Image 1 (cartoon, rainbow, N blue to C red):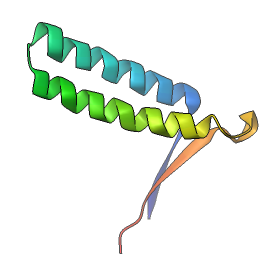
Image 2 (image 1 turned 180 degrees about the vertical axis):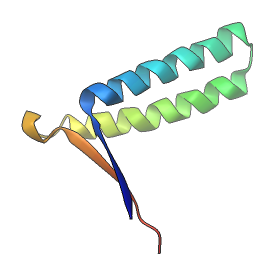
Image 3 (image 1 turned 90 degrees about the horizontal axis):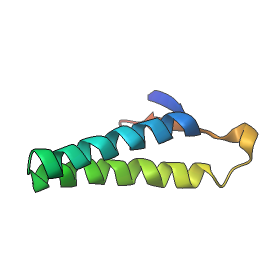
Length: 69
């Protein structure tokens, strides 16, 4: 089993970076498919951040776990 942890600040940084790449793909590269790819990843991290905001401040760390059976 492998796990990684993200603070809310780290998640915000990831979301901001993905938003930048989404905009670059759409407006500069004119690649709507690539922009949609970045947008889907951005939305997934936003869901994790939204869930994280429901916890008390001292517990605001997301532990993502990869479990293989």
